[in-house]
Length: 472
Image (tube, helix red, strand yellow):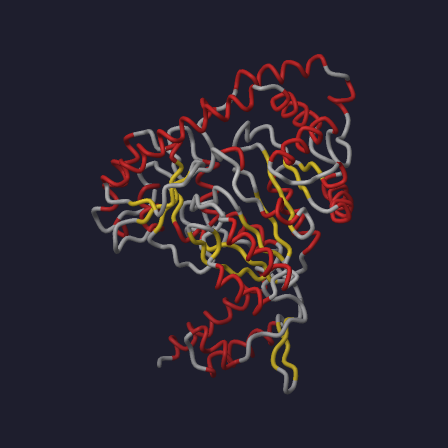
């Protein structure tokens, strides 16, 4: 081996350690992997790891401890890095890549990888009426902070909706938050500490992974089946790792569209209780269901299950408000945490608009119309995808997503990069997969798949070596 090759491998190991420290996978006082184990992980010789550790120790980033190994010192700890600092198009195809492309692309870009309904599907006239009604509101509504639990009127409406789903919630069980994302963030802040283990479905909503990385926890995935998590693997994983949290969508699962069966639900709850694992049930797609299905929160009674939700998918992503339903003592702690991080509950203006939208029968009629549209367009999208060689993993009972398998031999990350060069933002499988085992899958939003050019681009980038297409 040449000196140059040795130096390159040593630098590679050093950069891997720096990356783990920057990403907070290793913190001050943590022990580094043993030399032999890390050499196996990195595919280098133990002497290369020794050289890398010695150099990092010389820099003051780590320190040796006689007979015990090497430890992080915390000296000049760099800011938390969730991803490499690159231009959004050039960076690796990860959850941040998908989010940035979807949120920042201009109106000429097609976004079938996005996670929302088209603007003209939303109840915009009703929203405008609700906004105009604010002009007649008291000055206090327009000027003051929100209360710590959020709008009493909106909470009353939400309690009624929870009761319809069989969830026995009272006033003390409910807290409004600024968004559904903030609801999950508050729960993670409240219940997790760096180094804890969290279980998610594999695949799962990609922003679960992004948020958990920010909270510096260990993330483990369990395979998702058509009826919920692979229950044998779920039970074994809980017994082996005793994760602090399990975060899931029970119904209209993102990205697969699958729905939890009653049999699997009971075994999930029993395994979680036996291993003291708390379940966070993200129910943001509840209103896309034609009929209510099994809810972990309903079976558990909000003892060890926390339910979160919002209306960003069904009403407006521009007027956002989320909620947390949990046992009262946890809600009390979450209230204090929301005060510390947000100084009060969600915007009273946003809460008033959503209350106005939910109070009449207009919201139910809106969602009935949305569900009817989705039934038709889901079938049409599946047929059009099939004609270009893409097959749905299942046909979901509701929701906006199709989780699809690409033709054999194609990598969905490369397909997504090639499609981006032609003005189409896609959501490749591995951004949803903790184990990186979904490289042959893609998530499509059927409501955003009506433009024929999407299928033309898909056919084009799949029929030739996508690695030969340079991203724009």
